Length: 141
Length: 141
DNA sequence: ATAATAAAATTAATAATTATCATAAAAATT
DNA sequence: AATTTTTATGATAATTATTAATTTTATTAT
Ligand SMILES: [Mn+2]
Ligand SMILES: [Mn+2]
Ligand SMILES: [Zn+2]
Ligand SMILES: [Zn+2]
Image (cartoon, rainbow over all chains, first blue to last red; front, side):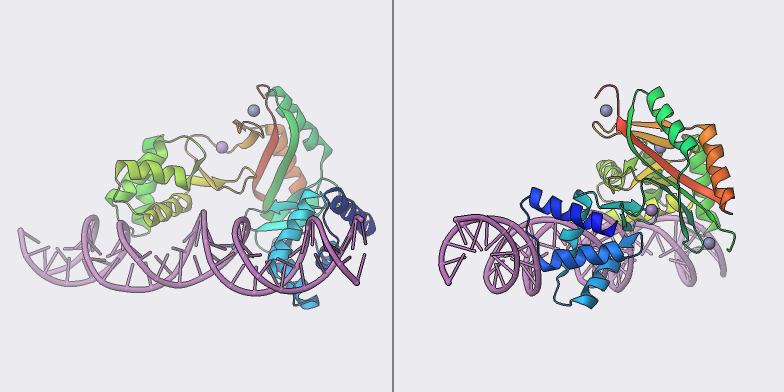
């Protein structure tokens, strides 16, 4: 899965005539190995720890490439912080977030997914994408 | 409805020992009269047109008060732009957005709302809030 | 190996928001 | 009504996150 993602990235680079560099390789490897829902800052910290000569701009640029190539997807859990998630770990899903401890559960309900398409159709829309975040308090809090 | 909101704002001010000022009154009035899903910038433009001596900081501060008092609610339609909507115009709802023309329809489906609560419960969560945005292409586009 | 091309790092620029502070206005007190 | 106290305001400065510009360096093709 990580290998698949890496291949996809390499293919994207060649398709766009972009070069394969040490920096890009390192950043992608770290991203694919990391926890889900990573912020730019979290990623940059790890990258710097591995190679402190890498500039912050390169991390921004590579994160953009990851998003363009479909390997990463941005999510926002209502706190205005952009997080990046690896789309190769799991397919489409929504999120259930604890507003006390920040616990984050990935959910997927086919009934809801179907209803969403139905509602869109009812208004003459062709549904392309959606986001849904449920905020609550978990049983440990 | 606008009057009700204005009262709520005044009550909030007294409860918090905040003063009733010309600027706050003007900004709230304009906000309550405006279109839904207003950005800070759009609001500031209108405010400046009415009274060009009002500083940008005051608009930011008042928008914060509106949010704290529950009269305004921030929404993000996936473009990282913060918009403020008047909660007194309508109750809870979700959004259906055209990614071509930006058309925005407010939707509410009791079946989905029920399923959301059920899913949360299944994971031991007490649901407090949620956001759902459907992105698609409208029939005019 | 050389040349051509693109990427990197560094630095500067930009934009959005928030902090500081001196002045002004509102509310409370006399 | 004048005075005092409290809080708000507007101007400016500071901060933060992100992007742009530029010079140097690395990668790829010849
Ligand atoms: Mn996720
Ligand atoms: Mn709305
Ligand atoms: Zn929790
Ligand atoms: Zn449209």
